[in-house]
Amino acid sequence: MKKFIIERDIPSIGTMDQIALQAAAAQSCDALNRIGPKIQWLESFVAGNKTFCVYLAEDKALIRQHAEFSGFPANQVTEILNTISPLTAG
Image (cartoon, rainbow, N blue to C red):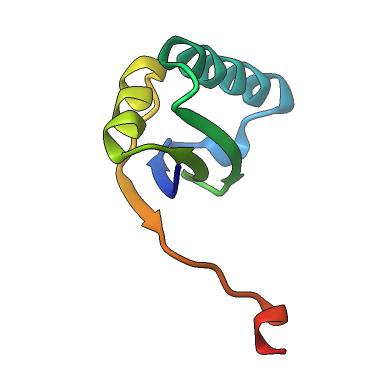
């Protein structure tokens, strides 16, 4: 599977409490279960009015389908081709 980062514009997501975030995560998982094993959610980073979500999927179409089923926008979908970190420097 390919790895993608999804930028989602969600107003005020950064001010949501833990209960609201838990409900959002459950909504996302329900959508994943509808689609099946060709897509997997790894993690999300919550900012002021955005989330940055990391998914594994066979293609962008599955990311778009998840957005449709979950009700969460996928404003920008970018395939991750490689990763670097301080460890990359040697």
